[in-house]
Every structure is written in C-alpha cells, then in structure tokens.
Amino acid sequence: MAIPSSYTEIELAQYLHRVLGPMATVLGWTPDGGSYDEIINDALLACGYQDISIANSPDRVRMLRVLAVCTMWRAVLQTTAAMYDLNADGSGLSRSQLQAMAAKSLEMAETEAAKLIGGGTVGTVQVTYADDPYPSTSFQPGDDPAPGLDTPGYDTDFTAKT
Image (cartoon, rainbow, N blue to C red):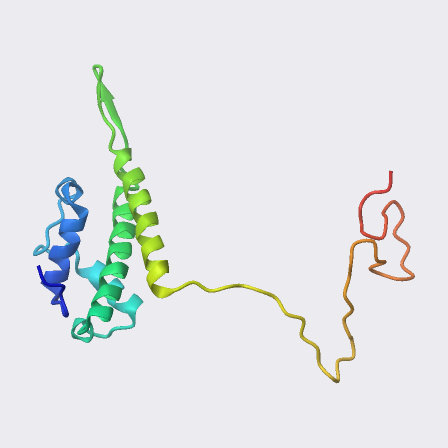
C-alpha cells in the first residue's frame, strides 16, 4: 500500500474510523455520517491548515494524521465521559472501560505527536536593566531576605526557629 501524499475529508474520516476500530460501532460513529467532521476541522486548525488540500506532501499528511488521531481520542473521551457501568442479576457491562481505553490511546497519540512536533525546554534567566531602580540580588537560603526587618520566630530562610 502506498503512503498517502494527500487526503480528502472522507479519506481522513475513513482512516480515523479504522484507527478507532470496534469502538466506532459502540459509539455509533460512521465515516460518511458526519461523525468525524468536527474532529477533522479541529485537526486542520491544529495543523494550521485552512483546507485539507494543504496536506499535499508526506510530511503534511503525517502531521494531519497524528493530530487528527489526538483530536479523535479527545472527542471519544468527551463522548464516553457520561458512560457508566451497569450491573444486574450477576451480569454487567463495564462501559467505563471505554473511557479508560480512550485515555490511554490519547496518551499514546499525544506522545507520538510530541515526537513529531518536537519538544521544547523551559528555563529561567535573570533579566537586568541598566536603569533599574530596584536591582535584584541573588537570594540564597540562609541569606537575610529583608535586611533590617525583624522576623521573630523565623530564621533568615523563613524556616521556623526551634
């Protein structure tokens, strides 16, 4: 099977339907019944594509697929949120398992999306200004945070005195 280099809305809906598998039947979702329309719209928005025709290269198709799967699992989580378990006469139906499966599938899809999109790092830097009337100093535990301020009952690192 050739890797797709473009998609139509119905082709993407059919792909999502295959990924959803038997859960699609439980939810009553069909590719041609509009079940995936808003999922596809949200995925296009997430990709920054105004139209599905913009997904016209393998890299863009991959981005669309990955984000569409994430969007689909979020929709499944929303749909299954109100499902509860039924128990009667010694037999039961655990519909809440659908929610647990969707949550795990969303986690896996988001992990794949993070790999594709790339991660970032978070850090801090000290910013100073030449004309800052309140120059900052580096505070270390044990330093007096407020010189001249009496802090009865507390050491200079604000831990209670014993």
